Image (cartoon, rainbow, N blue to C red; front, side, top):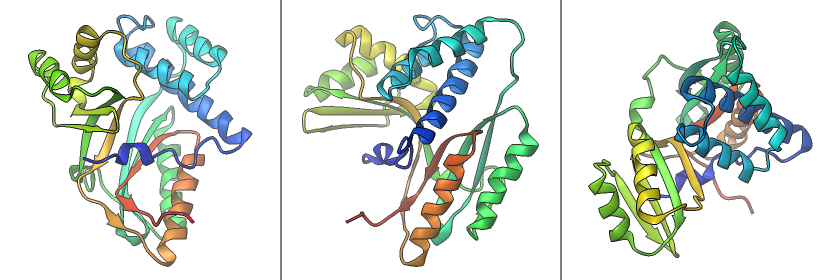
Length: 242
């Protein structure tokens, strides 16, 4: 599957304003995750992983605590998951994940980004069938066979495992996220995960070239600037910067 998962969020947190957006996105995601599965990270493994990731991205503790406090109270915002799909410049496939309290507004904002960059927003399922919805764990290690054995004993359907430069990366179906994480902890103790998340990984990549490069980067930038957008996944293969 390669290391495509490392390539996202490239445009995030470059300025103080962008960092504020990152904090807001994490706060919203933590709130929704805690509201759905409980505010105790020990029993809500998705929440625990999310909090750990937020701390690694230097999200202040007060942002995390505020989201948890809000989730533990009655009422609060009613955010729902919205996912949009389409084709960007160069015909690269794009998936946009959002958390929104107003789906009509969010769809209009996302569609505007596609329209302004001469891209095409599609119907649900138009491109997602060309992505794998994966749980991804990356951590320091050398014994790939021991990791695979531990996961298989826990009945985790491992789709791929990589070992390179003293690091192991595990890919499993997103539905096996909690089971895989618990199996790794049970076998190897409190692992310091370098990656611990669920992502859409493209099955194939599309080379974005010429004038399409700037347009594609503009599309990604516009989408990431939207408050309701949590993640943007794509199949675009952009030329490396000098």
